[in-house]
Amino acid sequence: MTGTPPPDPLQISGLVKTYGDRRVLDDVGLTIHPGEITALLGPNGAGKTTLISCLLGFLTPDEGSVRLWGEPSAGLSAGTRARIGFVPQTLTGFTWFRVRELMAYLAAYRERPGDPEDKVWEDWAALDPSARVRALSGGERQRLAIVLALRFMPDLVVLDEPVASLDPQARHDFMHLLPDYARRRGASVLISSHIISDLENISDRVVIMRHGRIRLDMREADIMATVRSLSAPPPTAWGLEILGGDTAGPVWVRGWRDGLDDSARAHGLDVGTPEIERLFLALSR
Ligand SMILES: Nc1ncnc2c1ncn2[C@@H]1O[C@H](COP(=O)(O)OP(=O)(O)OP(=O)(O)O)[C@@H](O)[C@H]1O
Image (cartoon, rainbow, N blue to C red; front, side, top):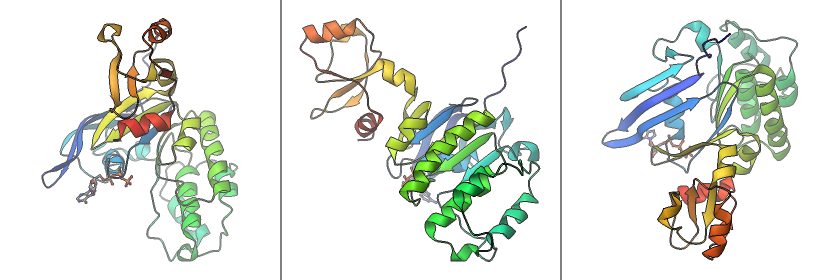
C-alpha cells in the first residue's frame, strides 16, 4: 500500500529579510526532514538567528514562505505550535520566578504537557527547583532554557547556540542526550553552534550560511562520499563542481567518484577527505 509521505516539519523557500537597504537573508530555502538533525553553521552575522527568528514567527520576512508540517507559519494553530521546542541563545525575562514555578507556569500554556515520568532533561540540568531565575548563573540559565524547551517533548527542536555557556561536562552530556532524544521521539532538530566538532558527531545534514545565503546544504554522508579537497583545480573534463577555496589553500570540489582517485594521482593532485571544520572555513571566507 502506498501512502502520502508525512509533510516535512519545516519547509522554507525564497526567504528575504532586509534591514534598511541590507539584505540579511537573501533567497534562503531550507527543508528539515522528519527525524533528521541539521547543523546550521555560519560565521558571526551570517544570518542564522535571523533565519531562526523568521521560521518561528518572531520576525516577519519581506518575501518567501515558511511552512511547518505543511501549515503556513503565519497563523500557526496552537496544536502545531505545541509541537515546536525552541532554545534561545539566552533566556531573558521570568527573573522573579523560581525554577519550579516557571516550569509549572509554562506547562499551563502547553497543549502537550509531555511525559511526567520522563525526567531526562531535568536530571541533566540538575537545577535547584527553589532557586530564583535571576540568581542562576549564565550556564544554569542555559540549562533551564533547554529543559523548558525539551520537557514538553517537541517534534521539532530549534536550538540557537545552545551550548556556548555550558561547562564541558554539561555540553558533552547534552550532545549525547540530544540525538538520543531525537531518535527516541522521531523528532527533527535544527541546531546552530560555532562548536563544529560537537555538531559533526551528531548531525545528519550540514547547512553552511554566509552573508545571508546558503552556501552548502548536504547530508553529511554525501559530503563524506562526494566532497574532496584538492591541491590544485581539477581538469574541467572531470565534471566536478567547485565549491570554494582560494589560491593559498586547497580547492574544494563536489561530485567526487571512485575512479577519480587514479586520475588525481596521474595528475599529481593531492586529494583530501573532508572535515566539516575545514570545509566550513573554506566556504565562510
Ligand atoms: N534588528 C536589527 N537591525 C539591523 N540589523 C540587524 C538586526 N538584527 C540583526 N541584524 C544584522 O543582521 C545580520 C545577521 O545577524 P544574525 O544575528 O542573524 O547573525 P548570526 O549568524 O546569528 O550571527 P552570530 O553567529 O554572531 O550569532 C548581522 O549583520 C546583524 O548585524
